[in-house]
Length: 291
Image (cartoon, rainbow, N blue to C red):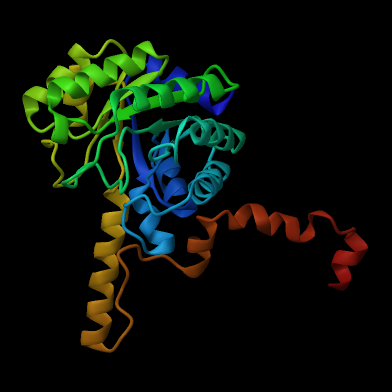
């Protein structure tokens, strides 16, 4: 079963929840915690290049990070693909590159440049036909029929809720596998999206973002099929770093970490047990005795 097929199978059994990973260690933590999918967050790109979520990463950089994350876990990975990194031609290459790296699906949005996180102000939205053409191109490019093309629209803030629903439905008609109405601003809007959109819907849960906080159980009862928590681990890591750095400056000692484990236990989370077996697996007994 492909990663994309595994994701669809999980979604058929209930709403899939995917915390956001920004590297391989956070993706392994998500897998170890028992979740059924990983979401590669674009906003978390700041973790390895130090940039804000303003569309500053190239397609290659995003695809390579998504591929590393997908290779580190057995779970399906859904990945942010920003605007598709250009026009329809760029979108086709983006889908091919993500799919080739084992990603289960991606989402493409209708922002223009400079693009930014969906929960920031002053977003630029491309014309309706430009957006739908890119969705059609994305659908045409996939080779695995189970690969998910998720159509994201950021139209709610600049153009209104009705336009966002219109674009979501048009994207579904164009062949998108799922609609992602970004940043609904009231609880009524959150509830209305799965009712008004004629296809599976995705919910983005951003702490202190524009969308009201809802429980995962409530989101599922509303009809959402997929929910992401993209910044949860990244924000927690930033807070933990600030706390530890402040404590060491104040105390002059190594503070006890929140996760109090030995170095070996830390390496085990990166797969040390598997790699330790390789130390002797390929040596003959006589060779091992002289090492």
